[in-house]
Structures are given as C-alpha cells and as structure tokens.
Image 1 (cartoon, helix red, strand yellow):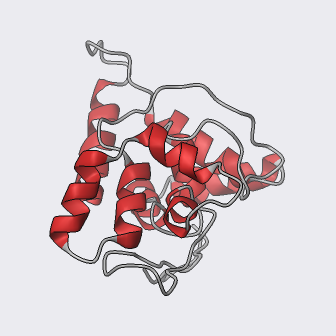
Image 2: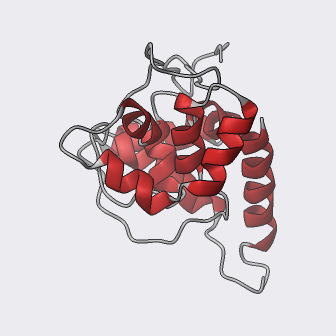
Image 3: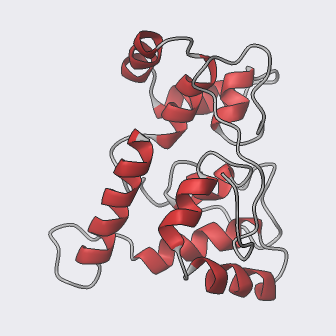
Length: 179
C-alpha cells in the first residue's frame, strides 16, 4: 500500500510539474506511459493500443502492474532498470534515464519477497540498495528474491515471505480486472 501511495503522489507531482516550470525537469506522465507500453510491445499498433487503454486510468494500471507480470515494464518506465530484460518485446530499447522517485520499487519488491515480518522487511529496506539488487539479479544463479525484484519471477515460491504479492496478468483493456 505504501508503494501505491508513493507512486500516486509521484505521478501527481509529475503531472503538476510537467510543462509548468518546476524546479527539476520531471518526465511527463506521457513519457512514463510510453516507456511502459513500449517495453513489452511487439508492434507499434500494440504499443498504441496499450497507451490508449492505459490512458483511461493510468494510475490504476501502473499500480496493478508494479506487482504483476508486467513489473519489468513499470521498473523500466520509472528508470529503475535500463536494459531490456526477459519480458521485453522487440520495441524495447535500452534507456538511460534517472529513476523518477526517491524510493526504490526494485528494493521494495526484493525485500517483500523474503520478509517474514514487518521488522525484517523494514531492516531489508534500510540495508539494501538498488545496485545490490541488480547485481544479485544478474548473477549466473540469481536468488528467487532478486528474480522477483526485476520481474523475471512473477509467483511467490515456497521460500517467499508473507509480504510477497502475486498478481495475475491483466490486459489494460480488460474490464473488470482483478488484482
């Protein structure tokens, strides 16, 4: 829930400062949405369909997908990963933009996977950083938590803690959509 509030506040700040002379250049929400849709798109038509469908309720889509099978697209869109990983489509191109928020969704996903208590989760959030999670994810044999963090793993395994979240794949145009 905390990540959703942070994401909504972050997206609201982006919407308010984009084009309004804010102190720091924030990526326009349309850029985040474009990156999200391009990441997994197999064609320009699929990318356009994703943008059109997501534009109806973008914060709901992004929130649902930050813990779902399209988490890699969210991580890519917000700048937490810059390369095209296992779930990328042919339209994906590596990017090099800074993360658009201070808190790391990548670290939150990593810590949520294995935490068995709120205290352990808090401890993990304070002691692990984005670079460490990426390094663990790119090892020859990454841990389940690292694979989950970058979106390669979408299910909570037997070693997952109580904070691991599973969300089914849901098309942005699907109504109603569970999760």
